Image 1: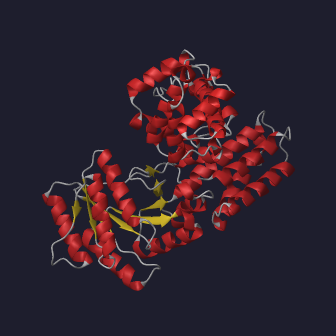
Image 2: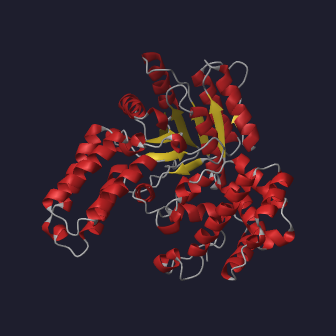
Image 3: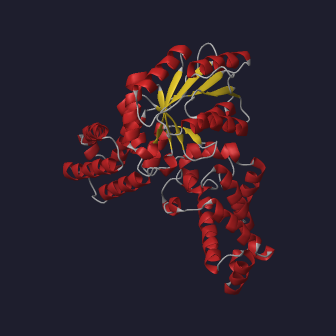
Amino acid sequence: MFDNLSDKLQRVFKSLRGEGKLTPENMEAALREIRVALLEADVHFRVVKQFIEAVKEKAMGQEVLTALSPTQQVIKIVRDEMVKMLGTHQAKLRMANDPPTVIMIVGLQGSGKTTSTGKLARYLSKNGNSPMMVSVDVYRPAARKQLSVLARDLKLPVYEGAPEETKPLELARGARKETVQTGRDILLVDTAGRLHIDEDLMTELSQLKDLLNPTEILFVADAMTGQDAVKSADEFHKRLGITGTILTKMDGDARGGAALSIRSVTGQPLKFVGIGEKSDALEPFHPDRVAQRILGMGDMLSLIEKVEETIDQKQAEEMQRKLLDDDFTLADFRDQMKQLRKLGPLESILGMMPQVGVLKDMKNAKIDEGEITRLVAIVDSMTPKERANHMVINGQRRKRIAKGSGASVQEVNTLLKQYTQMRKMMKSFSGGGGFLGKRLGKLKLPTGMGFG
C-alpha cells in the first residue's frame, strides 16, 4: 500500500538533498511536486490544499531554511503533518461502561462488512474479549449464512435467531439478550447494505441505532474505490453518526487516497485496515507508523508485534545464533521462509522495513505461496553438502537440482540469489553493529528473523 506515493515523495526529498541548501524557490518546487504526488494518490483535493498550506507555513520559516540539515527538517515537517492528517494517534475501540458493548458494522453492499465482522471478532477474541456476532441482513440470505460459516471457522458464537425472528430489529433484540445471558462482553451487529445510500437503508439503520444504543458504529469502506469510499463515509456520518472506519482491501490499493482523506473529510478516525482475505488480516490503524512507511522509514514496531505473535522463540534463538556465527544455510533459509509465510504476504512484511541500503529493492520482491512451495522443493532436492554450503553449487549441480525438483535452472538461480539477498538483509539486522542495532539503541527487539 502507498507504494506509488512513497516512491514519488522519496524522489522529491532526494532532489532537495541535491540542492545543497534550501531556498524559497526550490522549496516551492518541492511543494508543487508533493501536491501532485498527493493528488495522483487520489487524496481529496481539499485535504491536499490544507496539507500543503500547513507544510509550507512551517517549512518556509527562516530557521528551517538556514538550518544545518534543512532537508531533514522538511521531511520531519511533512511526517508530522501527515500524522495529523491521518489522525495523530491510534483510535482504539471504546467499550461500554455496562457490558455488553454493541458495535454496529455498516456500509454499502460489497464493501466487506460481513468479512470485516468476522475479522474484528477474531481480533477482539485474541485480545481478551468474548464477542458474539449476529447478521441482521434479512434481504440477502447469503449474508447470514456467510457469517455463520465464518463464526464456525473462527470457533466463535453467532446468533442464528429464532424462527419467528424475521426482521432486523427482532434479530438484534434477540442477539443482545443472548449476549447478556451467555456472559459475552461484545455484540457485533453485521447490518444490511445497498448498492447506494437510500432512505429505506438509513431508516433501518437509525432504528437499529435507537434500539441498541451502540458504543461504536463502524463504517466499512473498500479502499480500492478511492474517493467514492470517502464520499460514502461522509454521507453515512451525516445521516447516522459513525464513530470510525474500517478500510478493506488496503493491500490492493497502491495509491492510498482513501486512507489519507477519510479522517480529514469525516472528522472520524480510521480504526482498522483490512490487508488480505485471511481471518487475521485486520490491523489497528496507527497514523504515525503509516506516515513513516509512506516516507520510506519503515514500520518496525508493527513488524516486531507480528514477529512476537507468530515466530517460535526457540527456533528464533537458534536462528539468531546461526546468524551471529555466520552459519545461515540454505536449509535455514527454507525454514525461515516457512516461518515468514506465517506472518502473511512477504511483500507486506518487506514493506515494513526501512527503504535504505540492501533493503531498498527488497520491498519489490514478489513471493507468493506457490513460489515458497517451489522454493522448498528446490532446497529439498539438494544434497546435505549443498544445503550447508551454497558455494559448491556449480552449473552441473544446478541442472541436477532443477531436474529433481521439477524446476528450471533459472528458478534455481533465482532461489540462490534470493538466499544471498536475504542473508545480507538479515545480517544487517543482527547484532549491535547492524543498521537497526545502531539506530534502535536500547529498544529490545524479539529474536527471530535476525533480530537481536
